[in-house]
Amino acid sequence: MTEATKPPLDILLCAPRGFCAGVDRAIQIVELALKKFGAPVYVRHEIVHNRYVVDGLRDKGAVFVEELTEIPDDGQPVVFSAHGVPKSVPENARSRQMFFLDATCPLVSKVHKEAQIHFKREREIVLIGHAGHPEVIGTMGQLPEGSVTLLETVEDALAFTPKDPERLAFITQTTLSIDDTAAIVRVLTERFPSITAPHKEDICYATTNRQEAVKRIAGQVDAMIVVGAPNSSNSQRLREVAEREGCPVSILIQRASDIDWSRLDGIRSVGVTAGASAPEILVEEVIDAFAARYAVKVELVQNAEETIAFNLPRELRLSAAE
Image (cartoon, rainbow, N blue to C red):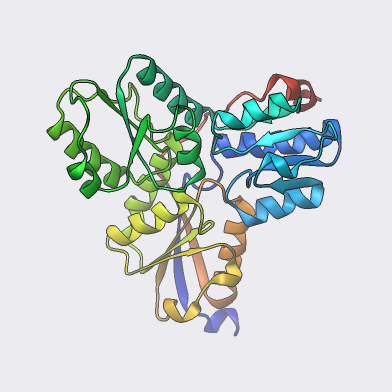
């Protein structure tokens, strides 16, 4: 196919997209630990939900495990993933005298602190989130078992019966759908007017910005491509947002090689975005794949500027400066 015979295609490229500050920090922590302490550096759970990133770090000497019991007592660093961990994990690491680095996103740590404050003030805590997600497991694991009730849907919120409606608080997972969460919060606040809300919304700035960027273009394109992992909550939400906003075809892919071209037959425009744990190189790969089949015109649609950066752990700051 020559350039002259390729069908035209408008690509609307969402911004912001891809890495957020928490993901960037987590990856840096593993890379700097490898540079400073050498391989292996153990990482409990995927550092972020992206196979390309995980495989790249594995190639550099990172060893990914699900539990601390898989790690030998060899003195090498252990990194906790960006999603956060239950309180029992660092306690266990200390009891084994492990040297650990906590890559928990500071915005997830903020939710952990909120939960602890509510617990100290003897409030019953409701967590809006997805069962089984590492962030939810980590947040619920900050407190004694049974202290937090997980609500996933509006139906859950309607069925929930607190012990004392006057001593109730809610927190949320940071990577949820803004609209779904708002609907659940609406039910809770209508049913329990004195419920304590977060001082500042728990859904993180990056999740919000990426969803708003998708909303802005979803109604203008024939298809939306979301680059991200199937186990990435924020990536799944981007696909759902595009669908809900009326985009006829909304696809979540890990790599360009995953694109099902039969679903894109006859399209004249496509939106492209990436979840917060997907690197930009994978977005470029997708655009190149479209450029091989279409005469593409790429337009950047900027919805917000992101300037947030998070501090590295003290043990690595000197290495970062070198």
